[in-house]
Structures are given as structure tokens and as C-alpha cells.
Image (cartoon, rainbow, N blue to C red):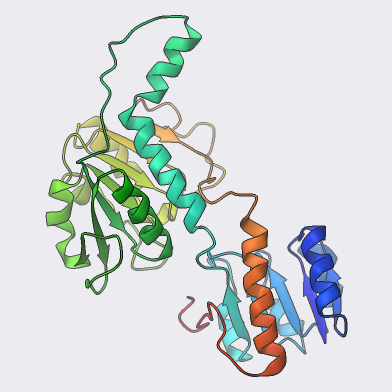
Length: 316
């Protein structure tokens, strides 16, 4: 069996897999242009999901399984994948630890006035005027209560926060004080001190947070987006901040990336911009390829359940 990767996988990981599965042929590449020739007769393909074009799928005559070493699958040619009945799995869940830590960092960044304190340090100015706030006793609303949201809720509870989740079904989940149906979003926004979006990119999530939602927030609230840029109406979030509808926005994801140098987000005093790094961690590939290794065992032996199997017809 031939296993091909375009994902520039670390040498220590590739060596371990080659040692364990010696009877199979591995072809490791740094990018898709290098991998294209091998992909044509590959049985298994490992990709980050942003480099596959429809013709890649159509020309891969033997392809049976695609492992996407990422959770996001916005650019995948799923129509062609579904037509050929190719198995798809992804690395959903591996971002939970770094992204949960990012969310806590951003809340503390605003609450403890980090930007102001750093500016004072640059100016060699001793001032204790910035008013610090505690996370303890405040409320956090998480839109997207999956693995990342659950991990964030766990950390937030350690800080003594009240945590509410919003999803499509409501119900109960560990570490959330309550899980509400998405129809309850307006009421939840009224009381949240921090609003966190971890929503994926789908047709349903486009402009999920627009002027209507921002006007339902507390004037003292902080909004954080580390899911996908399409969940936020970028023009209307600026209007809302300028009108004082809420206090601050921490944005890690955008409709256009890299964020253009002339974009108004960069200079806005109530916006903190980070360059889509909330999920970055040296543990990214080891965690993703651990899922691949476990799924490869299932694939080879024909029994067991795949981790993170994706429905190509639905795109998730």
C-alpha cells in the first residue's frame, strides 16, 4: 500500500511510522507540487486540506482514504471526494489545549490591561492608574461548545467564572454551568462579560455575530473570535465598537488572511489583532499524526471505529 503526504511532516514522526509499518510504502513531501506525481497512485493521502484541487481527486485512481491533519476543511473539494466514496478523517480536537489557553490569555490581556502596562514600560513610566479586573465571578459565553469550547470551559471554571455554552441542541456538558439552544443567544449575550466564538466556517455561521448581536452585549463586554472569520461581520463590529456597544474585541481570524496592512482593525484602539495563531503549538503534528496512526491500524485491519470520520456530503 502506498501512503503519500504533502504535509511536511516532521522527521521523527515519519521515521516512527516507517518503522512500525515497514510493509507499506511511504512518500513524504513538503508540499502538493512535490506530492502530485505520487498522489496519482496513492492509496492514502495525508494533507492539511488546503492544497487539494478537484483534479487531484479525479486523477488519484487508487485513493481510498484522505487524512486531513487539520480541523478546518474549508478548501476541500468534497463533491469530488464524495463522488468517489473516499474515506475522510481529520484532526478535530487537537487544537483544544492551545486554543483554550489562548482564550484565557486574551481575557487576561484585557482584564489586566496588558497593552497599557507594556506601553508604560516602553515609556519608563511608573503609573498604577490602570484599573485591573478579575476574571473571578465574571461570566463567559462560548459559541461552539465542542472539544475546544469544553477545554476552555474547564480552564474558565478554574478561574471561578460562570460558563454558558451555545449550540444547536442545548443539553448538558462537563464544565459548562449551562448549555443553551442557539435560539437563546440574545438572552445569553445580555449577561455575558466575555463572549467567545469558536464557530466553524459554514453557510449557517456566516455573519453569526453582526450589529444586532453586538447591540445585545453589555457595554463592558469583551468579544473574542478564534473560530473562523466569516462568523463576524467585519464592518459592523467596527460600527458597534465605535458606538460603544461593547468594550473590546480580540480577533485571531479574518475573512481575508493575511489581514491587509491597510485594514482598519490594525489601528482601532478597541481591537487586539493576532495573526491566526491561537491553535499553533509544537504539539500540533504529534497529536494529529497520533490520530492518523490509530486510524491507519483500523484501515489496515478492517475493524474498529475511525477517529474523526468526516461526512464528505456535509463537509464535516
